[in-house]
Image 1 (spheres, helix red, strand yellow):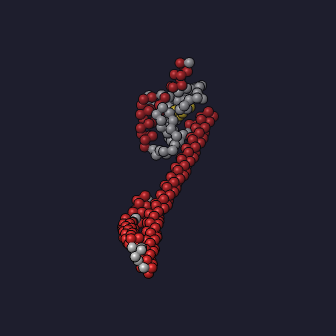
Image 2 (spheres, rainbow, N blue to C red):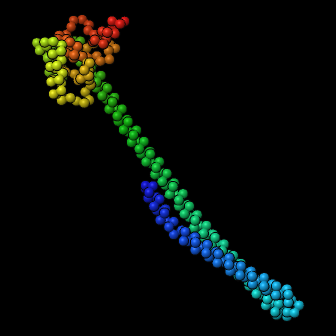
Image 3 (cartoon, one colour):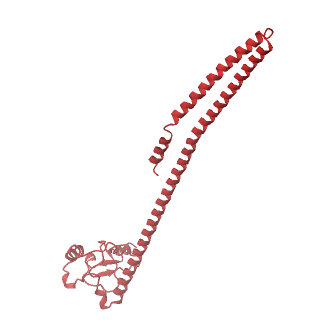
Length: 249
């Protein structure tokens, strides 16, 4: 239940509370007034009795004493009624206080439950994303391992790539090769968003590619056109970045 619903229900429950309290207070005030009136009568009877005690007969004295006793009994009844009204008023207010405490406890429990559900959902989503990331990394590692092993074997299959191969006669110069291969052949073909990227151009694997012989190379595989190659060089080959690093050392 939303916070607005809790508040609305509670306000509805205490809508008549001020009128009920006012009624009880008026009744207690009326009982106080009646008690004061009886006390005045008791004082008058007591004064009459003490002033005329010598002249009053026994029956008159008993009559005055009975009136005083009845007045005191009435005062006691009014006092008891007033106590009952006070207790009723207290219970009336305390009932609403207890309901407010109960609603607050339920509201806090609802909030905690929603926070737990939100945390569980975030945790599950995070675990799913991590699992997808690990699967992509494994797939990338397997792809690189297969491509590199086929290139090192020197078999005829090493010239076969995922996309069409470019024959040596199609290369006129590094700049023209890059222009022919990258924009037309790469951008027109469908690309898997999960497929890993290579080379200085950060594109997917296509055409002929060569692997850097530096085992610590961060890129590892390069397109022939991007590094200015038309044929596979003899011996070890290092990419431009690794070559610069080796010269500095």
